[in-house]
Image 1 (tube, rainbow, N blue to C red):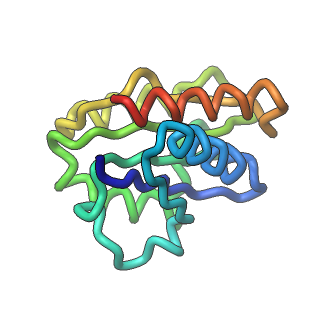
Image 2 (tube, helix red, strand yellow; image 1 turned 90 degrees about the vertical axis):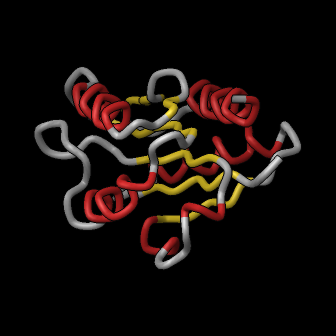
Length: 142
């Protein structure tokens, strides 16, 4: 089985904590997981990975972060048709509209979307970390 890239943007560390827990869950299934912030991923190619887990918190009026994550996503989404993709992120308000919109966008791009996006309110507690690890383990088998 090929590696999975877990690529995220995080302002306060909540989505980063989710990314690391998801990667642990992936690794628990003996699948390689490389974790990158958007800026760390840089010029690497998503084509080097079998699957992608993408993480971004809800910002402002329930939108994706506009300065780093949105440009990154726009730069790769043309090549995501047929690719297995999982979405995750934290939020502080609202009802998850940003995730529903993001899921619709990815489906429109032809992604093979894994489950529904995993969202956790604010900082993931022990139960939230467990949810992330379980999400990662299931994604490894997808």
